[in-house]
Length: 459
Length: 98
Image (cartoon, rainbow over all chains, first blue to last red; front, side, top):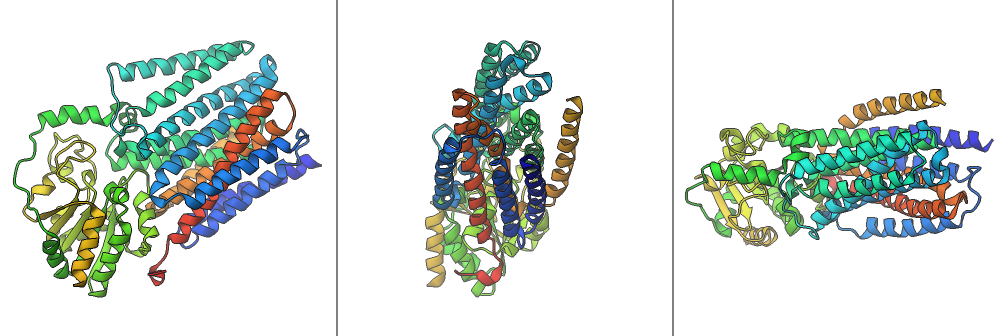
C-alpha cells in the first residue's frame, strides 16, 4: 500500500518537474514553472517519508532543519552578484549528497552487492566526488579564495588523463571484486583529487563552461543514484539536470568557438601566452575621454546600445547604469542591452544583474538578435567587457580568440569604453578596439564613472 | 533484475531526450534561473538520502545519510527559493521603478 502511494507521488512529481521546466522557457510563466517544480519536490519528499525502511525520523528531521536554515539563509541574503558562487556551491552539495548515498549503500551491502548495483554505485561515487571537489574549486575561484589565473604545470594534461585512467581501472577491478572495499575507497579518493585538478587550469572566463559541465555531472550522479536504489524519480530528475547542463555547456563552448575538449584540456592561459608572443601587439594611440566628453556623445545620440561584461558585476554598476539609461530614455533616446552568451561567469549572469536593477527584459537582446543593429547605432557603452567585443576575433587569424562570435560594436558611430585601466582582458589579448578612432576610453571604476555621467546628464 | 536495469535505461533515455527538447527552448535570458532550478530539482537525491538516514541500517550509513540529507536539503530549499527571488525580478516595462 505505502509503496503504491510512494510511486504515485513520484509519478506526479515527474510530471510536475517536466511541466515546470517547460514553463521556465518564457519569462511570463517562469515563476509559475519554478513553483510547479517545487511542488513536485514537496510531493516526492512527503511520499518518501512513508517508506517502509524508514524507522526513525530524528536524523532526517535534524538534517532537514539544518539544511533548510542554511539553504534559506543563502537564498535570502546572498547578493545577486554572487550568483555564480552560489550555483557552484550548490553543485558541490549535490555531488556530495550523491556520493554519500552511494557510499552508504555500498557500506550496507558490501560484497553482496550485485553487479547491476555496483556498476551505478561506482559511477555515482566517482561523479559525485569529482563534482564535489571540482565545484568547491570553482566556488573558490569565483569568490577569489583561489587564484582565477589558470594554474598550469608540465605534463598537466597527461597526468590528469593518467589519473583518470587509473580510476577507471580501479573501478573495473572493483566491479569484479566488490569484496575489496579498499579499491572502492581509493577510487573515491582519487575522484576527489580529479575534481580539484580538473578545475585548477580553468581560468575565470572559462567558468561558464565548467559550471555547466559540473551541473551536468551533478545530474548524472543523481541519476546513477536512481539506478542504485531502483528509484525512477531520481533517474528522471537526474537525467533532466544532466541534459540541461550538457546543452548549456555546448552552447557556452560554441559561444567561445572552442570545443569541449579544448576548454577541459586547453588551459586557455597557456594558449594565450604563446599566442600573444607571436601576434603583433596592438600599437596606436588611445583616445581618452572625460566624463563630459562621453555625456556630450550620449546627449546627441538617438540610439544607444549597452554592452555589459564581468566588469559590471565586479563593480556592481548595474543600478547606476539603469539610472543613466532611464535619463537617456526620458530624453527620447532608445536604449538597448546586448548580451554576449559568455559575458560574465555563468550563462545568463548579466541578465540576472540587469533584472535586479529593474531593467525590462524587453530591452535585452542576444548576440544574434542585435548584432546587425550596431551599424545603425549612434553610441555604444561598453562596461567591463573586453574579449566579447574584440574585433580581432573576426580579423586576426593568429589571435587565440579568432573565430569566436563577437559583438560588432566597432560599427557604431562612437564606442564609449568604461574600463579600469588599459590592461588586457582575461585571455591576455590586446584589444584593437581600444585604439580605433571612433572609440573613446573613459578610465575608472565603472560604477563611479556611471554615477558621474548621471550627474553630468542631469546638470 | 536485468529487466529492471533495462527499464531504468529506457526511463533515463526518454527523460534525457525530453530534457534536451524542453531545455533547448529556454532563452539565454533565463539561463541562470534555469540552472538554479534544475539544480534544485537534482536535489531529488534527498529522496535517496532520506532512506539512508532514517532506516537504521548501521551507524555509518545513518551518518552518511544525515550529511546527505543536510546537503540535499540546502539545494532543494535554497535552490527553489533563490530561483523564485530571481524570477520575481524579471519584469516588463511597467514595473520600471519599484
